[in-house]
Length: 80
Image (cartoon, rainbow, N blue to C red):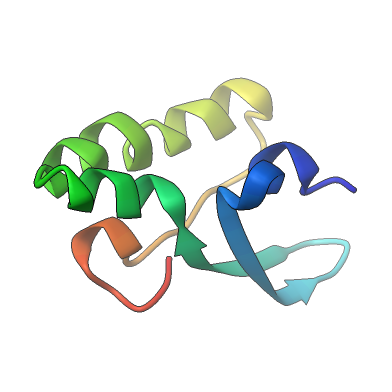
């Protein structure tokens, strides 16, 4: 239920890696945003408009939370 706003209509498919009192880790294994930007031939714009905003969103939502992401589907990785 807590994932529903982000996964609504299949926009993201997530695989839970860890859920504890101190960490929440998951892989994004499908991103329809990446698919859309790729189909339009502008994945680099998707990286800027979608992926790069996530850190600021997390910081504004919960300043004590840290987002760590080493790769993205938008850049061609197998997961985020």
